[in-house]
Image 1: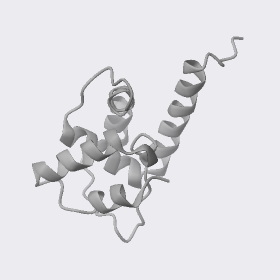
Image 2 (image 1 turned 180 degrees about the vertical axis):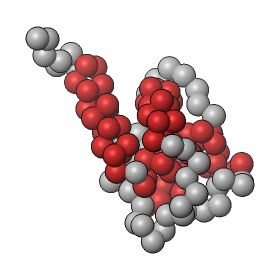
Image 3 (image 1 turned 90 degrees about the vertical axis):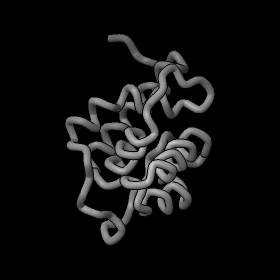
Image 4 (image 1 turned 60 degrees about the vertical axis):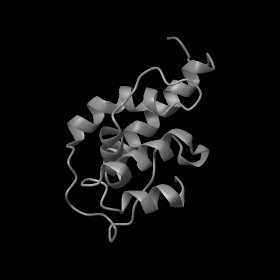
Length: 117
């Protein structure tokens, strides 16, 4: 899932390079293939220095979702924070799956296809 360009950007030294964080955030906001910034990196490419815990990542889901809406972002997210969430989602299967469910539910709600019980 996701495009090769986002993978390439996430394996750079973006944590210490503000311009690279900006490139990642800009790419996520503009690339139609990135599916809201979701990408999987191979274990060999992933460094173990993920700055976010799962709890912190999940807390950022609403802001990340809104900030990655290309047509009408309702809120802004700092470039570095967006890059951190994208990186965490690229290596944490549990958070990745939870975010995918959030995306599916949001899309159903936007299309008014939610079933009330």
